[in-house]
Each structure stands twice: as structure tokens, then as C-alpha cells.
Image 1 (cartoon, rainbow, N blue to C red):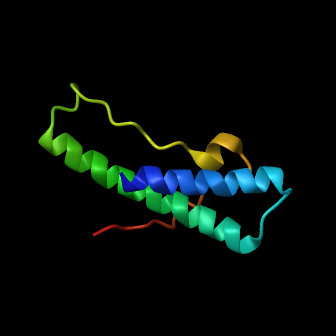
Image 2 (image 1 turned 180 degrees about the horizontal axis):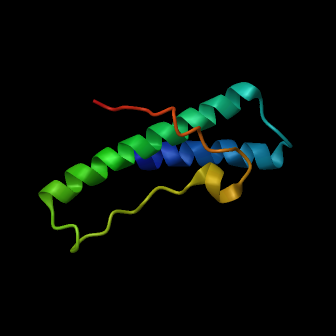
Image 3 (image 1 turned 60 degrees about the horizontal axis):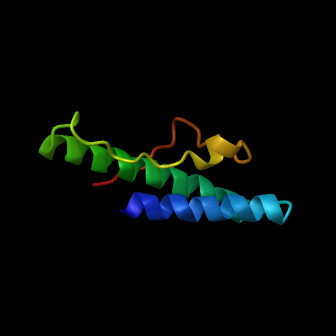
Amino acid sequence: MLFQELDAWAYDIELEYNYRNGISSKKKRQHVKLCALRDALYAKYKEEFEKSHNPRSFSIPAPKCCGLRSGIIPPPPPNKSVKIQ
């Protein structure tokens, strides 16, 4: 699933931040955009999954909250959202 690949990519940026003692501002912006896109894709996938399946019988693995989990990169502001059509 695409949101899991985006999650792995965002996590790689976090590891780079941890082991190289910082990352560029471009990488930070990229991380925020990746997490926002990942969350939007996950929400869309979950909505479509629940329409076609009984949501109580299956569990969809949620993406890791990369920046929120480690606390190294702040989450995107709530007024910026990524819309998928």
C-alpha cells in the first residue's frame, strides 16, 4: 500500500536526522509533506475499505506517526491539508 511506503520513506528521513545530527530545511519540509500525504492516503484507503468490508471484522494497519512518535519534527499545522481526488 502506498501509504506504508510513504511511511517508510518518512521514517528514513527521521533516522537520517537522528544519526547525522540534523537535516536540511528542505528535508524537513519534505518530511512534513510526506506525513501529510501519507495520512490523507490512509484516510481515503480506510474509508473505501470500510465501505466494501465490515469494519469490525478486519483491522487495517495504521501508519506510524513518524514525527509525532519521535518528537523530532513537528507535525504539519492543522490548516494545511492534502486533498486526494
